[in-house]
Image (cartoon, rainbow, N blue to C red):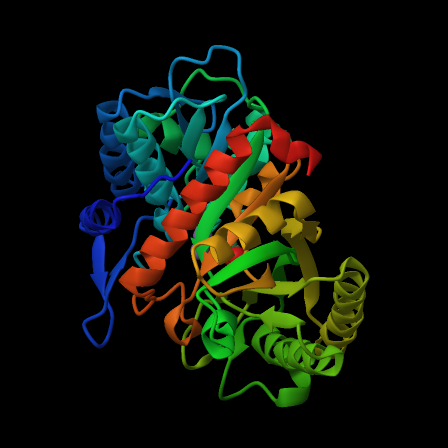
Length: 417
Ligand code: GLV
Ligand code: MN
Ligand code: MN
């Protein structure tokens, strides 16, 4: 089956979706801010659903707001599925997530246009709140789809702006009746931008993604004594900001000690009352640590915990922590990974194997069925930033290989390979 996708149509749809909730970077770069379950997210959803319906697909919405569109005509046959997300972080680029959804749509439209008859249907979906930027954890919709988190528990999650997930879902009209957990597809493959520098540095057009590193998110709250910044002697303070700064330094030291590929990030800090001449009463910050090896990740978590307890005691502040997300590393299905590699080589595209640094819906779908991912290069490795960029040729090449892999997966013989 030789199918050629329409690259121009893919790029047009990417441009059109990017018109919803646009933001501009410092050098005029075009990005997006479509935080999960906001009015902006709803507008993006409505547009993508209209495209799904235009293709005559069977569109369903489940209890957590995941939207899945399946080709008709194969009742009871598990589809080969692709998809990703269309929510973004507040400082999002145009490609993170959106590429995977719109490329899936393009593959399906090309198959329909070419009149190709398949042994099993194709499906494309977008999952709710992949970013976890508004409601933790990340990959929330696909986690619920895969049965890793109960629907009721998920609906009760409260956002960084104090809203209940279930209420927000209802407000935007995307609480559907399709069951959670959802049915297992025959296989799942997700196209995504790399969001890191490896493919560009190594000079490869595509990545065959071997798995996703483990992710640990924690919210840390330090409570002390608010007081006057001029009159309170240093030894009499119970200053949560001072403790927080030392904890941040401890995180950097531990990460440096473990070395690459260990990463550690403090991405959000809040002080109360956050005034220049007041020793704060409270400091709240988030810690994101990731590694491809579960034992190493656990050890980093343990070491950080010991340091935080020691520092909190030295400053006389109370320490409390809340786990916001914790996912072990995921290894993708070798057969699907090598299908991706072979499909790229068939198209004369250089391809390398690499693990993913970012979290993805595919890591949840891997609990249900054979799964892998395809990466396209990210210029300068920049992502979660309006400057996020992938060349048009690479976007189109990624979509073509996605089509080739999805078609190969519809043929039952691939399982035995
Ligand atoms: C989510 O996409 C993450 O990797 O933070
Ligand atoms: Mn993403
Ligand atoms: Mn992202």
